[in-house]
Image 1 (cartoon, helix red, strand yellow):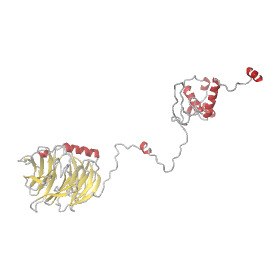
Image 2 (tube, one colour; image 1 turned 135 degrees about the vertical axis):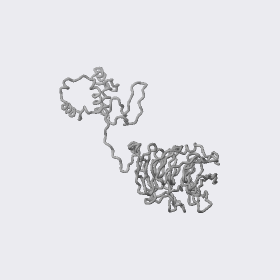
Image 3 (cartoon, rainbow, N blue to C red; image 1 turned 90 degrees about the horizontal axis):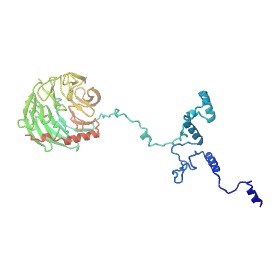
Length: 467
């Protein structure tokens, strides 16, 4: 009876009843403050959405992908900084100096609130264990090499391969070596014989031999397209050979001395003995015209890359540059290589390499090599000139074109030199009865494939009848 009266008088709280709304809010705030969570976070660290049909975002205990450190104090500072600009200006606070405001902020908060960040990422970095290797470091921290900076080029001073070449004729005025641009076959003239060496398979065969032992091979030249080889001899003849069938197609006689130099321009085979001859190999009456100008023997004939100019160098210390019609003359001494800027190399007395301007006839640049120059070849992969030297240097020198800056020197007595089809390997024949192969130029695989496609797509002009 006394208990019933005490309940009616409301002297004690009623036990086992639901908490009021105000009590629930107070309890919730106390719990969040003790756990260091923000008001929008649940106890397991997840962002909770309100409403009956809303679902909580799934996450793991303790995960926070965006803000590693976010406590209630930081949230209050963030809220203050966000609302500070839009709030009313405190007139009393504006009169305080910045030093006073900074001192108050440091004493109240432990740091200057003006320098505070809304989002704070903190914590000490954990030292990586010994021997740990971060695989992503090279991927994301690698310094990008500029396109203009190239790797250092390595050129070996020793030949990649040495082949036997017995009885080469020791004469710098002859052209005893040539490399097929399509078949990858190296051809060498050894006295009165012509040998073929297949660079792909490594096989060597005898193509032809002159009947008389006193005669000798004086020049060789492959067609730019096809498998046909022109052979100049000391008995004043030019022979055409089909290398695939290993048979002679025809023999042309129009010279009065040994044929020391040959150069193809499509179906026209320019040759020299005492004068420059232009025969058309498609015609039965092959002789087209004859060029006269040199007073002494010609050492070298070479058509330009665009096939518009023919350069001839002779023992009369003159270089002539001929267009398709007979006219013109340029400079002094022997041998030509490039298109409108031919390069020439002097003999024992001159010993200079000179680059000429065809239009004006003037010398652009020159270099004293201190040695006789027996051969010049242009290497397109690195835009360099290769010069073969006899007495007194006995070497092959690589020169940057057109500055003529020395790149590398390869030692060895050289009679002639040539390049393989992709211009990556130098072949030299020497008086020590050897052929040396030097891998001196890198080849870009993409550019090499492009060149091969162009060569395959080009039809052979020489397949027209040769009589």
